[in-house]
Image (cartoon, rainbow, N blue to C red; front, side, top):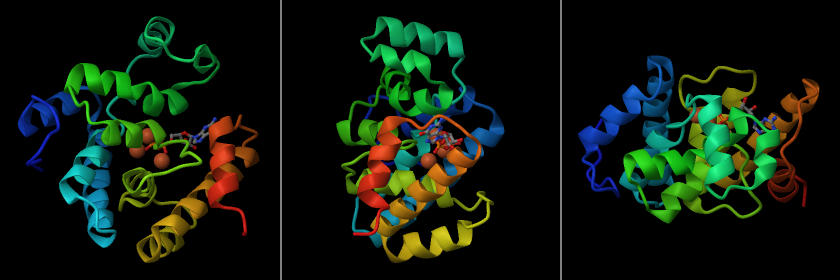
Length: 195
Ligand code: GDP
Ligand code: FE
Ligand code: FE
Ligand code: FE
Protein backbone atom coordinates (compact mmCIF):
# COMPACT_ATOMS: atom_id res chain seq x y z
CA UNK A 1 0.00 0.00 0.00
CA UNK A 2 1.56 3.28 -1.09
CA UNK A 3 0.21 6.60 -2.43
CA UNK A 4 2.44 8.47 -4.86
CA UNK A 5 0.43 11.61 -4.37
CA UNK A 6 -1.25 12.24 -1.00
CA UNK A 7 -2.89 15.64 -1.66
CA UNK A 8 -1.51 16.52 1.77
CA UNK A 9 1.76 17.73 3.34
CA UNK A 10 1.80 14.31 5.03
CA UNK A 11 3.59 11.41 3.37
CA UNK A 12 1.91 8.19 2.30
CA UNK A 13 3.42 6.41 5.35
CA UNK A 14 2.12 9.09 7.71
CA UNK A 15 -1.40 8.93 6.30
CA UNK A 16 -1.45 5.14 6.54
CA UNK A 17 -0.15 5.24 10.15
CA UNK A 18 -2.75 7.83 11.21
CA UNK A 19 -5.55 5.88 9.61
CA UNK A 20 -4.44 2.66 11.29
CA UNK A 21 -4.40 4.30 14.72
CA UNK A 22 -7.91 5.74 14.24
CA UNK A 23 -9.77 2.42 13.79
CA UNK A 24 -9.67 -1.28 14.56
CA UNK A 25 -7.92 -3.71 12.23
CA UNK A 26 -11.14 -5.01 10.69
CA UNK A 27 -12.15 -1.51 9.58
CA UNK A 28 -8.59 -0.81 8.39
CA UNK A 29 -8.61 -3.91 6.17
CA UNK A 30 -11.96 -2.81 4.72
CA UNK A 31 -10.40 0.57 3.84
CA UNK A 32 -7.47 -1.16 2.12
CA UNK A 33 -9.89 -3.26 0.04
CA UNK A 34 -12.01 -0.21 -0.84
CA UNK A 35 -8.80 1.51 -1.94
CA UNK A 36 -7.87 -1.41 -4.20
CA UNK A 37 -11.40 -1.68 -5.61
CA UNK A 38 -11.48 2.08 -6.23
CA UNK A 39 -8.25 1.78 -8.20
CA UNK A 40 -9.79 -0.96 -10.33
CA UNK A 41 -12.97 1.04 -10.99
CA UNK A 42 -10.88 4.12 -11.83
CA UNK A 43 -8.94 2.18 -14.45
CA UNK A 44 -12.16 0.91 -16.02
CA UNK A 45 -13.67 4.40 -16.07
CA UNK A 46 -10.61 6.42 -17.18
CA UNK A 47 -10.18 8.18 -13.85
CA UNK A 48 -6.92 9.00 -11.98
CA UNK A 49 -6.14 5.67 -10.28
CA UNK A 50 -3.96 7.05 -7.49
CA UNK A 51 -6.48 9.69 -6.56
CA UNK A 52 -9.29 7.12 -6.45
CA UNK A 53 -7.14 4.75 -4.39
CA UNK A 54 -6.46 7.47 -1.80
CA UNK A 55 -10.11 8.57 -1.64
CA UNK A 56 -11.18 4.95 -1.16
CA UNK A 57 -8.56 4.45 1.53
CA UNK A 58 -9.67 7.43 3.66
CA UNK A 59 -13.44 7.07 3.09
CA UNK A 60 -14.12 5.53 6.55
CA UNK A 61 -11.32 7.39 8.38
CA UNK A 62 -13.78 8.78 10.96
CA UNK A 63 -16.09 5.77 11.27
CA UNK A 64 -15.00 5.03 14.86
CA UNK A 65 -14.57 8.56 16.20
CA UNK A 66 -16.50 8.73 19.52
CA UNK A 67 -20.11 9.95 19.34
CA UNK A 68 -19.43 12.74 21.86
CA UNK A 69 -16.65 14.13 19.67
CA UNK A 70 -19.00 14.13 16.67
CA UNK A 71 -21.68 15.99 18.62
CA UNK A 72 -19.13 18.62 19.68
CA UNK A 73 -17.88 19.12 16.11
CA UNK A 74 -21.42 19.35 14.68
CA UNK A 75 -22.31 22.01 17.28
CA UNK A 76 -19.11 24.06 16.98
CA UNK A 77 -17.83 23.74 13.42
CA UNK A 78 -20.70 25.12 11.36
CA UNK A 79 -22.51 21.91 10.43
CA UNK A 80 -26.28 21.69 9.81
CA UNK A 81 -27.74 21.19 13.31
CA UNK A 82 -30.24 18.66 11.94
CA UNK A 83 -27.28 16.25 11.85
CA UNK A 84 -27.68 15.95 15.63
CA UNK A 85 -30.85 13.93 14.92
CA UNK A 86 -28.80 11.28 13.05
CA UNK A 87 -26.02 8.90 14.00
CA UNK A 88 -22.52 7.79 13.06
CA UNK A 89 -23.82 5.87 10.03
CA UNK A 90 -24.67 9.27 8.51
CA UNK A 91 -22.01 11.39 10.27
CA UNK A 92 -18.87 9.50 9.28
CA UNK A 93 -19.12 10.65 5.65
CA UNK A 94 -20.46 14.19 5.97
CA UNK A 95 -18.72 15.15 9.22
CA UNK A 96 -15.89 12.70 8.59
CA UNK A 97 -14.50 15.20 6.09
CA UNK A 98 -13.79 17.54 9.05
CA UNK A 99 -11.55 14.92 10.72
CA UNK A 100 -9.83 14.08 7.41
CA UNK A 101 -8.96 17.75 6.90
CA UNK A 102 -7.87 18.18 10.53
CA UNK A 103 -5.81 15.01 10.95
CA UNK A 104 -4.76 13.90 7.45
CA UNK A 105 -4.52 17.47 6.07
CA UNK A 106 -6.18 16.44 2.82
CA UNK A 107 -7.78 19.50 1.22
CA UNK A 108 -8.59 18.29 -2.30
CA UNK A 109 -12.29 19.16 -2.75
CA UNK A 110 -13.00 16.16 -5.02
CA UNK A 111 -11.64 13.68 -2.50
CA UNK A 112 -13.51 15.36 0.38
CA UNK A 113 -16.76 15.40 -1.61
CA UNK A 114 -16.46 11.70 -2.44
CA UNK A 115 -16.07 10.92 1.28
CA UNK A 116 -18.93 13.30 2.10
CA UNK A 117 -21.22 11.43 -0.33
CA UNK A 118 -20.04 7.85 0.19
CA UNK A 119 -22.87 6.71 2.50
CA UNK A 120 -25.95 8.55 1.21
CA UNK A 121 -24.93 9.31 -2.38
CA UNK A 122 -26.47 12.47 -3.88
CA UNK A 123 -28.53 13.73 -6.80
CA UNK A 124 -25.33 14.81 -8.55
CA UNK A 125 -22.36 12.43 -8.44
CA UNK A 126 -18.92 12.92 -9.98
CA UNK A 127 -16.99 9.95 -11.37
CA UNK A 128 -14.89 9.85 -8.18
CA UNK A 129 -18.04 9.96 -6.01
CA UNK A 130 -19.45 6.97 -7.88
CA UNK A 131 -16.16 5.06 -7.71
CA UNK A 132 -15.86 5.35 -3.91
CA UNK A 133 -19.58 4.76 -3.36
CA UNK A 134 -19.48 1.56 -5.42
CA UNK A 135 -16.08 0.30 -4.20
CA UNK A 136 -17.41 0.49 -0.63
CA UNK A 137 -20.38 -1.69 -1.64
CA UNK A 138 -18.63 -4.35 -3.73
CA UNK A 139 -15.14 -4.68 -2.19
CA UNK A 140 -14.15 -8.37 -1.97
CA UNK A 141 -14.89 -8.60 1.77
CA UNK A 142 -18.57 -7.78 1.27
CA UNK A 143 -20.92 -10.72 1.52
CA UNK A 144 -24.65 -10.12 1.25
CA UNK A 145 -27.38 -11.51 -0.99
CA UNK A 146 -27.00 -9.69 -4.29
CA UNK A 147 -23.33 -8.72 -3.98
CA UNK A 148 -22.30 -10.81 -6.99
CA UNK A 149 -24.98 -9.17 -9.12
CA UNK A 150 -23.88 -5.77 -7.78
CA UNK A 151 -20.28 -6.51 -8.84
CA UNK A 152 -21.34 -7.65 -12.31
CA UNK A 153 -23.53 -4.59 -12.88
CA UNK A 154 -20.95 -2.14 -11.51
CA UNK A 155 -18.03 -3.47 -13.55
CA UNK A 156 -20.21 -3.26 -16.68
CA UNK A 157 -21.68 0.19 -15.94
CA UNK A 158 -20.80 2.44 -12.99
CA UNK A 159 -24.06 4.44 -13.13
CA UNK A 160 -26.15 1.28 -13.14
CA UNK A 161 -24.22 0.15 -10.07
CA UNK A 162 -25.15 3.37 -8.24
CA UNK A 163 -28.82 2.76 -9.05
CA UNK A 164 -28.58 -0.83 -7.88
CA UNK A 165 -26.93 0.05 -4.57
CA UNK A 166 -29.41 2.81 -3.71
CA UNK A 167 -32.41 0.57 -4.35
CA UNK A 168 -30.79 -2.28 -2.40
CA UNK A 169 -29.91 -0.07 0.60
CA UNK A 170 -33.33 1.61 0.71
CA UNK A 171 -35.07 -1.77 0.58
CA UNK A 172 -32.91 -2.94 3.48
CA UNK A 173 -33.49 0.22 5.53
CA UNK A 174 -37.25 0.08 4.99
CA UNK A 175 -37.38 -3.60 5.88
CA UNK A 176 -35.68 -2.71 9.19
CA UNK A 177 -38.02 0.28 9.65
CA UNK A 178 -34.95 2.52 9.72
CA UNK A 179 -35.10 6.26 9.17
CA UNK A 180 -34.15 7.28 5.59
CA UNK A 181 -31.81 10.23 5.22
CA UNK A 182 -33.57 12.61 2.78
CA UNK A 183 -30.52 12.84 0.51
CA UNK A 184 -30.51 9.04 0.10
CA UNK A 185 -34.10 9.21 -1.07
CA UNK A 186 -33.36 12.09 -3.46
CA UNK A 187 -30.45 10.10 -4.87
CA UNK A 188 -32.65 7.02 -5.29
CA UNK A 189 -35.13 9.13 -7.31
CA UNK A 190 -32.35 10.16 -9.69
CA UNK A 191 -30.30 6.96 -10.02
CA UNK A 192 -32.61 4.00 -9.39
CA UNK A 193 -35.99 4.83 -10.88
CA UNK A 194 -36.91 3.46 -14.33
CA UNK A 195 -36.68 6.26 -16.84
P1 GDP B 1 -19.56 1.34 5.81
O1 GDP B 1 -19.18 2.62 6.48
O2 GDP B 1 -18.43 0.73 5.06
O3 GDP B 1 -20.18 0.37 6.77
O4 GDP B 1 -20.68 1.66 4.71
P2 GDP B 1 -21.55 2.98 4.44
O5 GDP B 1 -20.83 4.19 4.84
O6 GDP B 1 -21.99 2.91 3.02
O7 GDP B 1 -22.87 2.78 5.30
C1 GDP B 1 -22.92 2.89 6.70
C2 GDP B 1 -24.30 2.54 7.19
O8 GDP B 1 -25.23 3.58 6.88
C3 GDP B 1 -24.90 1.27 6.59
O9 GDP B 1 -25.35 0.43 7.64
C4 GDP B 1 -26.06 1.77 5.75
O10 GDP B 1 -27.12 0.84 5.70
C5 GDP B 1 -26.46 3.02 6.51
N1 GDP B 1 -27.24 4.00 5.71
C6 GDP B 1 -27.08 4.33 4.41
N2 GDP B 1 -28.02 5.23 4.03
C7 GDP B 1 -28.80 5.46 5.13
C8 GDP B 1 -29.96 6.25 5.38
O11 GDP B 1 -30.50 6.92 4.52
N3 GDP B 1 -30.50 6.19 6.64
C9 GDP B 1 -29.95 5.44 7.63
N4 GDP B 1 -30.52 5.43 8.84
N5 GDP B 1 -28.85 4.68 7.44
C10 GDP B 1 -28.29 4.68 6.21
FE1 FE C 1 -18.70 4.33 5.35
FE1 FE D 1 -21.37 2.89 1.05
FE1 FE E 1 -16.86 1.71 4.04
